[in-house]
Length: 302
Image (cartoon, rainbow, N blue to C red):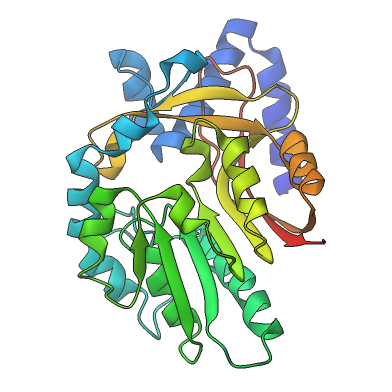
């Protein structure tokens, strides 16, 4: 029955004039981004700027955008509810970006389980009882550090977060057991069992230079998650206006060709252990190609 309905919809779309078919596809993509068809239509009618926009690479503003005070203020404001939402026996169904009172979300649960898979692989291989050394790149005020403790309550971690100074200052009193570092070279001056980067590397202008430094640290595992990837186009820059999360700013980031990305890591001595899918597909109206969010776990080979 569902298959027949899907076929009927496809036939109807083919019968529409091209301009209406394009509008329908645009609205569908905007609905995913805005979480409701009503909001997507409102943005289209009002002429309000899209949350996402492809821009020339010379418009890079990521560092300044992430320093906006609304980011720290919003993360602190949401911290208590986030911390309560991940306590046993609750499901891991709320993102740290979720608005107050938001219902549990399967996508957030999937991302947490992806993180848990990577950390679990590392813990399972440790035989000597030493703490698991983990570098969380762009870990905010400590959301994944808290998740690690809830996912593996009996494990011992030497947990390090590389973050901007404003976020590090906010995170230190919340998680005194975590080391917050604000310098790339200092963070990568040592080797880790796992380097984990969730929705962070794409905001580095020299992303492949940063990946090279990560590989040179000699860390056993490198995991990237919640990164926007494309299949056909060359890497390009997008501007995001994350106002719906409470961040009153804008910042730039990369949409990366995933085949180029994986080949780069292989050339640096890391084999692809597993690929992960994330249910995030923002619509960028003027992009040469729409992205899918993915994650990759790499293991050092030599």
